[in-house]
Length: 376
Image (cartoon, rainbow, N blue to C red; front, top):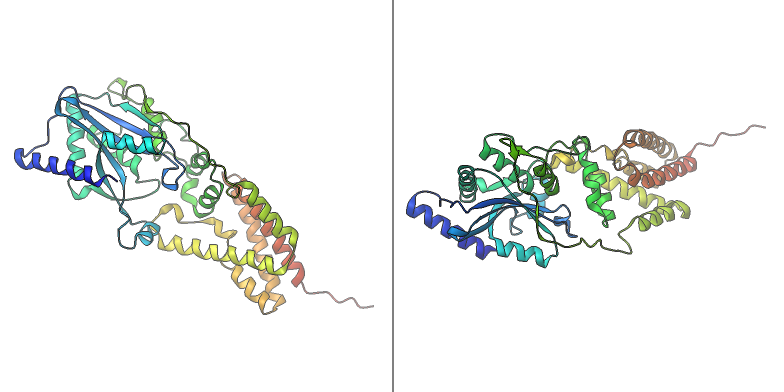
């Protein structure tokens, strides 16, 4: 975050408003465009970024409005982020600083100029500045519903008094399916989002929530019987480097689960089931605690069942009867879970865990099944 640049821009805008009681009028040379930034390998950059550029050479203006800012110094930052009430806000950068940052990170930047009237440009510029200088610049971040991309869509549609920008492709895919390709080279991040997200991401992805969804939709959008944006222009071009990791890949995942199955030790089985039960408790807690709708109604608790903890306790006190009953119960839950997700995008990434859990639960059931006496 370029706080120094932001303070300078804020000061100039405030000074002008104070002196003249109105926003700066744009010249006829002004243009407003959407910037789409490429994917990175840090968690925050997996999906790219969206911003709005206002350039007016006659007024020596070249500003980028960015809806993706947050403050790490926020009290209880981690708790607020997990709960879903962390405040994001819009800031302004100089265009040069903005490009330098993405050049340093080796991430591509694409530009699409809005083909709108001078009056509409002015109205959008005024709306951006009004938002920037008021409490409206803060918003509560939501992964699908409110983020740097959706906020850009909202302010442009608001300016036009019409829902001009809508999603133009992949509306027949679920949000989960849309997200999957973005995790290339980040296997455990893909696995993590597969198990922590609930039913919301299995809905059809009808909303624009990712930067390149917006870019592609703008290319197909018309307004007042003409194209809404100019042909996309590449400002910075970099090939995304897919990271190679000896551990963050499907092979380490399969090796670990294969080891758990083949070693066939009670202690290892209990550790595995204990980890699953803790994850289940976490998922259930987050479903009630968090405002993130993506975490609610998480059917993955059928696999990561908190009740596995009871199975472990009964096993520890050598209560074979109830250990057997809970093992059978979880085999039934596992079957229901498998049938439920068999047509979901994350089925194949979860399948090895389903198989591992099934093998362990069968072993537990066999070990604790009441023997039928044979009378000769």
